[in-house]
Length: 439
Image (cartoon, rainbow, N blue to C red):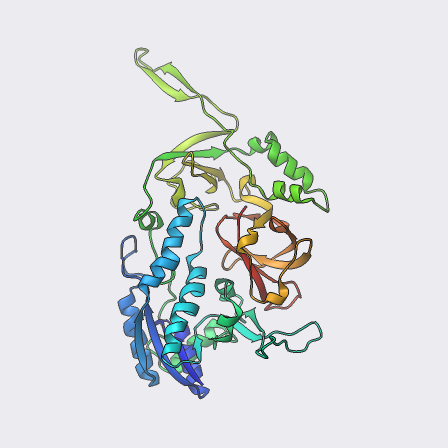
């Protein structure tokens, strides 16, 4: 069997290539360049020229053919343009999930197959196995091909299944994950034992194939900077907000109608917090000045350069001091260009129990697991990479999939992907489906 390894220059893909060669596969390596523009990229991080150089040395060390492919145009069209569009709408996309779905296991896979590859292997920490039915027997498609399951990797600190939550059965059938059964420490050990040039290379950070970026500077390539207010919301606001109080009352129920689920999944709006001005005389009693009147629900504490550059749960980059505890973004309003913040990680604006996934953007890794309106399912859910799995109840309705968490969640962010895993108690559960957080 001929296998193309996506060799990135990192230790993970290097060891993936090493293991495949040791197992007797006909292996060749291909390095993909997906980004040329350096605007907004922090110097020294994820330099593709250096990565390509290391990848080529690894291939030479393993004595496998090495090729280069430029997929930058596909990456810009399928990943970066989507990313700009989502930020412009006030949503926060995950470009790494899109990169795997649209580039690594689509455009790159096509190139690999054109070169004769039967399979594509990557250095992802996850596992693939043939799916089993309720009776424990292997599942097959009508054409006799296996139905595949995607499971978490063995290393709990490095599992990357979340990034693959949008893959389909065709993509999984062509995918290999050679290091999914290893710990990161074991991967490093194997790299050192084989004297691979990437053995001590640090893990890459930032946006897939772009690198670590100053996000506002990066986004300003297409999104205009417009100054707006940063408004701090005080906790007493929630004691008088009708929507918040209604949600608190509804959460005491054990069952909810479609209308009640919509209410529970709709975030609190802060547009009712308004600020009136007043004039006063300065100390010299001659010059008149203007100031905002005191407001019991909040205050304007600063300015920003564009609400679209901020995301819910964000802490860094606000440039706001004078607080005993960290300040977090709790909401953004693109129309009024306002960023709302709250002090402390337990601020009420950060915590929610219910969210909705768009019905149009639901994706099932196995079509036999597709949920129908009226169905409910106990599951474990992850709303961001490396977040511990959270217990929840899924409720499919005509207007979307509602996720009711057992415990309140911090920073539920529209535009992000939510990955749903089986609640079977296994240490490395199967990834069942994913969806885009709508509310």
